[in-house]
Image 1 (spheres, rainbow, N blue to C red):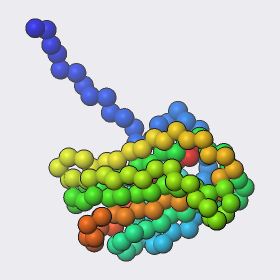
Image 2 (cartoon, rainbow, N blue to C red; image 1 turned 30 degrees about the vertical axis):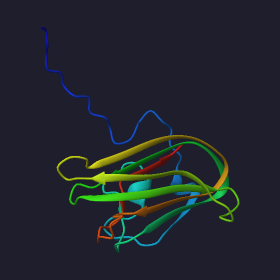
Image 3 (tube, helix red, strand yellow; image 1 turned 45 degrees about the vertical axis):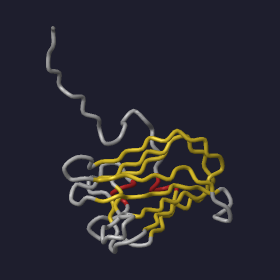
Length: 157
């Protein structure tokens, strides 16, 4: 039998060949809480490493309110938890009428484990037309623990 050990391919935390939207100039960001050491800009803007973290435990909401309606074809999410074992649930939804009605994009649970799965990445191909609100709801620990919600990166194209 012929065999050889190969070097694993390491994927970047964001796919660099994509022209991501500049959320900084396109949207107002609303959130239920924010740790000042981990501001939301760190998750939404390129070149930031720390990501966003809530200041208090429990369910958290991050809402992007766009000044002009947008058409979105791709959403890239990255969550990282390397300290505690927990099951997180998140819901990503959008609105074209200022929040009068919502369309769910994805609802997902993920089990984080410091000895194994420490990263969850979602690369969603979508066809959202005339979107003016995008909302991410994070339940950091569905068992009701004291975990803090966090988001490493969110990118839109």
